[in-house]
Image 1 (tube, rainbow, N blue to C red):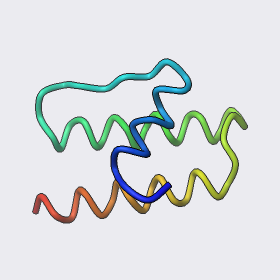
Image 2 (image 1 turned 180 degrees about the vertical axis):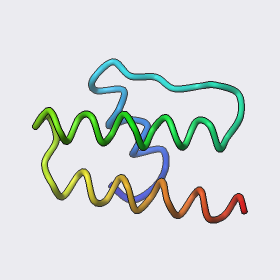
Image 3 (image 1 turned 90 degrees about the vertical axis):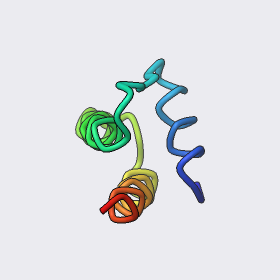
Image 4 (image 1 turned 120 degrees about the vertical axis):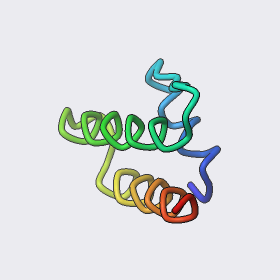
Length: 63
């Protein structure tokens, strides 16, 4: 996983498609969904940490 598109594809594997219309809201919802997938043991720690870093990088670019 290297970019934001890859994070979207990870979520899509689990039937999760996020589009609220506001970029920051999309990113925050993605963070919550990734957290839930990790807590449910559906993704491994490496996928979790990489996805969260990518999402946080995207959030920092918005501010």
